[in-house]
Image (cartoon, rainbow, N blue to C red; front, side):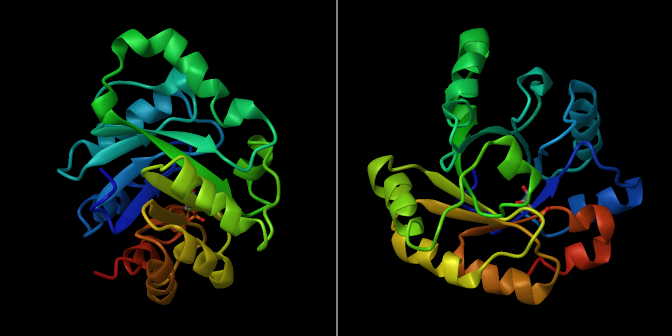
Amino acid sequence: MLKDAKHIFKLDPAKEISDEDLEKIAESGTDLILVGGTDDVTEDNVLYALSRVRRFSKSVALEVTNRNAVMPGFDHYFIPSVFNTSNIKWQHGLMLEALEEYSHLIDYEDISMLPYIILNEDCKAFEKAEAKPVTADELPHYIDMVDKLYKAEYLYIEYSGIYGDPEMMDIVRNHADNTHVIYGGGISSKEQAREMSQYANTIVVGNIIHEDVKKALRTIIK
Ligand code: 1GP
């Protein structure tokens, strides 16, 4: 589902957005709205986000970070799997627990695993996922592992909250031969969107939609 998407707006269900701003986001040229966040994601706020976005024709997917906040009605579901974690729980432990509970309800056509490498050591996701720092020397091996051993469909390079390091992204680009690379973190201008689009197949724009919708809209460079 992400393969055709060049640009995604990530809507955090725990953060506020006015109806007017949401309409601008949903009626923009973005390819997909991805509902997801790290903290305070609940059944109530995910349902509220879904019902608000569903008034528009834009595709909407859920990134599952709380298995108690999963519901039908999204076009697709992404299950994050952190590869630079020191605790297996965040790579596949939670996924396994969710399968034990929900496997009878799951249509695997509608679900994709989303391997993550979290590179911003100061972001909430890094802390929550008990992630380990990744050096420039280690990064090629992480990418080769995801791309050539796991042969994963997707790889999400996460800098949530800060703009990423182009040199690290260059390593990603040079090693991801088949995996579809998604970049997210700190994009708030057309120039940044353009730069990161050179390294990734898809860029994700998050926080700025809750802070300055005009700036957010300028990140759509198609
Ligand atoms: C967060 O990668 C996304 O998961 C987007 O990051 O909020 O910094 O834009 P920002």
